Image (tube, rainbow, N blue to C red):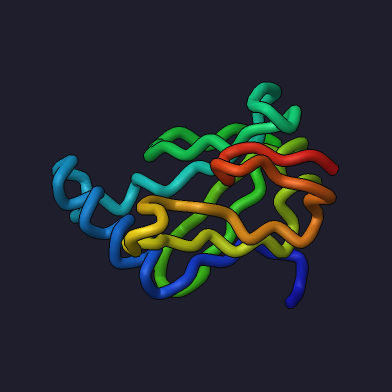
Amino acid sequence: MDNSIYISDKAKLKVSQLMTDAGIVANDNYFLRVSVVGGGCSGLSYKMDFDNESKPTDQAFEDNGVKIVTDLKSFLYLVNTMLEFSDGLNGKGFYFSNPNASRTCGCGESFAV
């Protein structure tokens, strides 16, 4: 791993489907923005959205054909994190496999470092 943010094959397929549903799949200006915000049971929560406006301190990556952008502060928490997607019976949705997290909550949506 080389200090990036990664996306699994399953997560890529789901992101592509969501972009298609939103009518932005053919628009190369859009990307997946991931960030870390305060809150959640463990102190920090993940946030994801589609965006088409870059900011001067944004960090941009491309993995598995998906452009992923994050702000510099969030990147410090997200370095070498893998965005995953599960459609299993025990939970459905996106989750982050974050090597920087010292603990996570039961729902997987928040973490602490």
